[in-house]
Length: 469
Picture 1 (cartoon, rainbow, N blue to C red):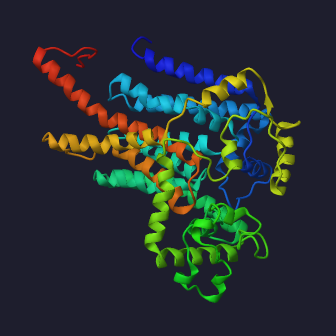
Picture 2 (cartoon, rainbow, N blue to C red):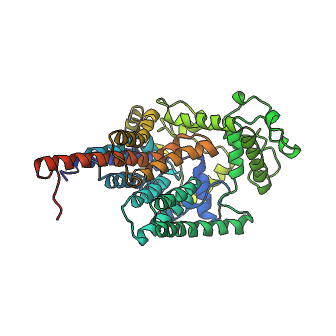
Picture 3 (cartoon, helix red, strand yellow):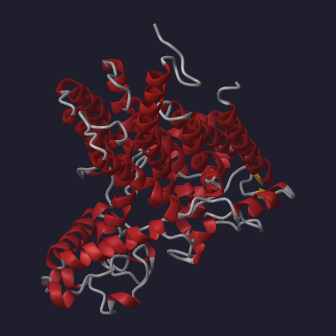
């Protein structure tokens, strides 16, 4: 207890803040996506927009008939993620390992995200678990299979998990470990392929979701210029005559009634519409590669701002704040349908009850306690800066460093939404724990060497060290 007292203090504060959330906002906070996930609980079939992993998580908790149990489980996953990061950062000094857990345990927006009925907290925990297992020196075959299954679960929770399978398999290949990479890939791909077969049997379409083309089309509308692209006649109906700087955020091209895609006959995510949107998006990217790169970098830059401006609109931004007034019922028709299923899940009325003074304390805390984007950028820069410093000191790495795994995962998690969809504040938070782990692992070896030098100079272990025999 004494050796880990600072971490236990941070963990205790994190648990207290989550208890405040449970007391102040009962039983949960709702997001537009929440209702879709709940529909899938009662009508088990792949969704065209979101994979069903989070719905499976909700299904496991359905016998309790309490959304409060769901938010409690998500808060426990947030605390468990902090424990995992601290455990994996054990090579660093304990104060560094403790500091690495502060963003996930004490960031008010992280706590608010855990209280929302969305998939991001589950996704964050699955990714962190896979990364923590992967940074072990030589994981056994069973552990490798576990890493693969965790990555598969993450992919079926949020599709942004797909490239992470490649990243972690590449990590083992980079170290010349071909068999472990094969075990990991096999364990990850079997569940993903099985889900893809279920999706194909349902829609006669290949994939995990049916909206990749639509989302990429919406992304390219931030720069696509049909005068420069010169699209064929069947793609011209997707053009927007307004200049790019006068267009709405990308998400409006998916959901707004005046979107060229939404105006097409049938639902937005039919195979014909998705294929058409994908063709338009690829033509825009290949015709205007520099504009696409600039647009992607501009979207990524939103991640690293010190302030937190309203984006993409006030409605979505508001879902990430602890509200002062009770949220109203869902307005959109799909959400209204989902609300009826939510009543079945809860076996009673749904909504959010705001209880003072607990809710007010959390709102006050959220106004000051967050991880600024500029600080996240500094955390991401710690590992490469440490490498440069060591090379300048004449120390070269004999093998790929352990921090490369969490660092690569964090970078992929931040870049992928900017490249394929758009920036969203909740997309940033799952990358934070692994980014902090990478920074702690990059600092750790230097501290170990300093301790070894002190031991050699004094002829005995340094302070806080033990002799292993």
